[in-house]
Amino acid sequence: MPISSFSPITTGIVNLPSIFAEQNENPTENAVSAFSDIFANIYGETVETNLTLQTDAIKLINGEIDDLHTIYNDMTKASIAVETFVAVKNAAVSSFQSIIAMQV
View (cartoon, rainbow, N blue to C red):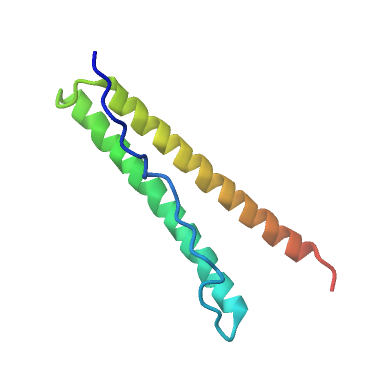
C-alpha cells in the first residue's frame, strides 16, 4: 500500500492575535478585545468541528462515507476543541474569581 503525503491539520488550531501588534492609548481596551477575539475564535472552532463531526456521522449512516478513519479523526478534533474551550473557560473563571477575592 503506497503512503500518501499528509496534509497539515488546521482545524482546532487557534491563531492568537498579538496583543502588542498595535498599541492603543488604552492598553486595557486592547487586552479586552484581544481576549474576546481569542475566546470567540476558540468557540467558533469548537462549534465548527462539532458540526463537521455530526455531518460526517450522518454521511456514514447514509453510506456516503465508507472509511471510519475520517469519523475517528473528526471525533478527535472535536474532542480536542471542546477540551481547549473548557480549559480556557475554566482559566477565565478562575482568574475572575481571583480578582473578586482580592481585598482593596
